[in-house]
Image (tube, rainbow, N blue to C red; front, side, top):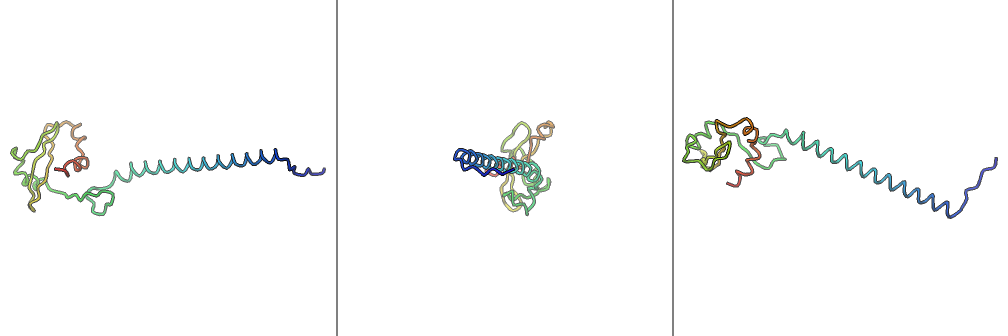
Length: 137
């Protein structure tokens, strides 16, 4: 059986060329789509699992620019003169903010949950969310 020579028909070569170009575009678009999906999933994973476990008081943590310091309740009570109502800055639905002066002379705002706060109010009281607000005082 004799083999057929490849025809040099311009119409056949143009169809073949267009199919190759279409195949290349399809493969490229699929690769870009998959890389984008992998990137989005990684960012979501990093945000939900890695960043949520960082400790704001960890001095080695580079993701949080704040330099936070831990205080004992006794120190906070002393700084606000026993949470004296005269040192009150403001009162919200679940907490009161007091002005206090630390032993080193630094003036700070201290937020204390009210004793009658509901469990929902306690969940809403998140330290990091309030840090940004209190930084401006």
